[in-house]
Amino acid sequence: MPIITAPVTTPPTGPPTGGGTPVPLPEIGLATATYTDPSGTVWPLTDELAGWFTLSAGVSGLGAVEYEYTSDAQPRGGERLRHAQPQPRSIVWPLYVYSDTSHMEFIERWRALATAFTRTLRPGPDGRRPPGVLEITRPDGSRRRIHVHYRSGFEGRGTQGSGILSDTAVITLWAEDPFWVDADTISVHREQGVGRDFLRPYPSVSSSQVLGATTVTNPGDETVWPTWTITGPASLVTFTRQDTGDSFTLDPSEVGHGPLLAGEQVIVRTEPPQVRFQDGTENGVNWIGALDWPNAVLWGLDPGVNDVTFALTGSSAGSAVDLNFNPRYQTA
Picture 1 (cartoon, rainbow, N blue to C red):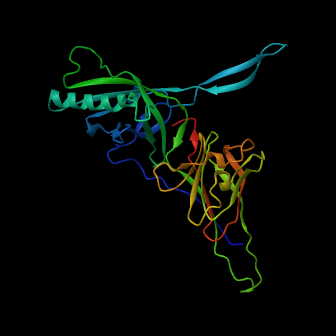
Picture 2 (picture 1 turned 90 degrees about the vertical axis):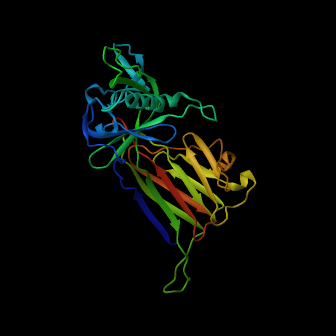
Picture 3 (picture 1 turned 120 degrees about the vertical axis):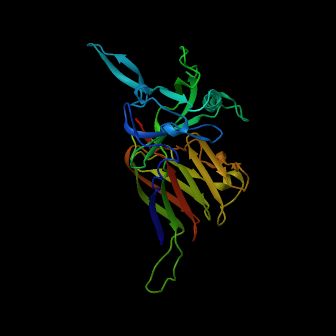
């Protein structure tokens, strides 16, 4: 059976325009930094020409995650660790804002930055408060990012002479997920190729399934929860993690659709669980009932090598599975 297998890693694209030259940041070393507010506007944080820049000596909270322990007392003394719970992260980021020309130019910059950070506390149409994105870029172009909300610090120094042409905001940002995420997505693609004639140039057979025994490497420090995209034709799809035996199966007939036709797609997100049939609308149709509950386990990929298998019943040329994830790290 012809199968095409191509693990692909999207190459880093480097820092955004205006990101500045790398500066030494505590806990992580040389890097540039940007902040993207919920509106999508990118703010360089390490470019002095922008009218503001980071006071790197005061930056903190970029290192390893803090944990809260649950432990059990031992009869002969001491305790045994039962569980370690990652805690939300606080990041302190001092910004020096200035103007070389006028008080009003300084005030405009100060107000714009304050709005960009505090916008993370404004509820969106769905009632949720969308985070901003703090992104750290290394000199080699690799990027890690974290979702943050503004907590405090945009008050200025309040000393004589400050607030006229310059001032410093010591901002505290709060990250509900404390892990840093690679900005570049790792993708694995498996596709059934075009079948060939049984007798040309020699006897061959094409199966009714795409059976993919694939090794997926997670280069990060933490478990990741991938997104799967299934492209028809297919009547039944099963994803299995070999070391644990955990699996889940997508059966379109469970939601009254019948087999996926050529080109039809379903996207399965493992965290939070979500299954969407792509019908051309913005969010697609909820197909969570197409999974084999209660046996379905939407498994993650542990750090290192993971042996996985995906199988499509009723497949033909064009049937494909795409796995996508972004590695997660302890530090920036």
